[in-house]
Length: 199
Image 1 (cartoon, rainbow, N blue to C red):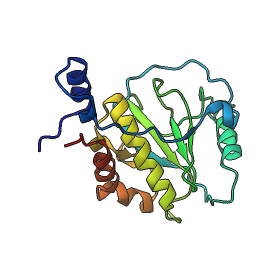
Image 2 (cartoon, helix red, strand yellow):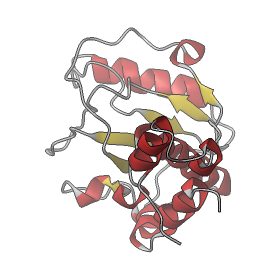
Image 3 (cartoon, rainbow, N blue to C red):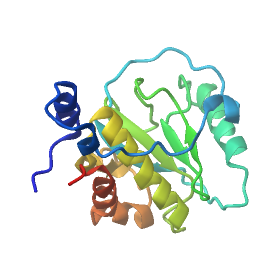
Image 4 (cartoon, helix red, strand yellow):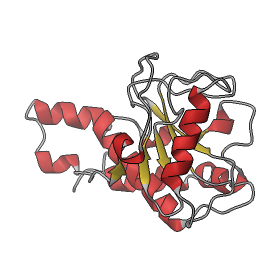
């Protein structure tokens, strides 16, 4: 079976060359909005076209019992302050150990980083935890796969672009226990399964 790129599938459907069912609808996962977690208003920054996925960790030990919304708000407040002077929280999405997905900065705006690499086109996804020491939870992994599959279908981002922060900069992020799941192709394969067109 020939697997076509998401953007080509959408174009063919618009032109009437493909039945809508063949687009393999990928459901939108539940996402906690910025207003729901109390985000500050973002400042203007460079626009981007999403083209690849980049996975990060927070490098802070995190458990299911902790208040993720408060932690995310603190990251944003700290990052937009004198410490970093970022324009917003640096990530586009954040996933807590319970598998809850939080909306970060606008997907059409470049992310920011405290390391030196070009973030243009990167969809920055942060999993809360220190994965040099912890293992990501099953809920986090399922949520990350579902999110990237949905974004792949919505924006035509190939699932084989899934990489990590350390693939672009000198850093341990996202930690060895999360990195190996990108290195061995787990995320790419699982996300691709959800985006395959119907037979």
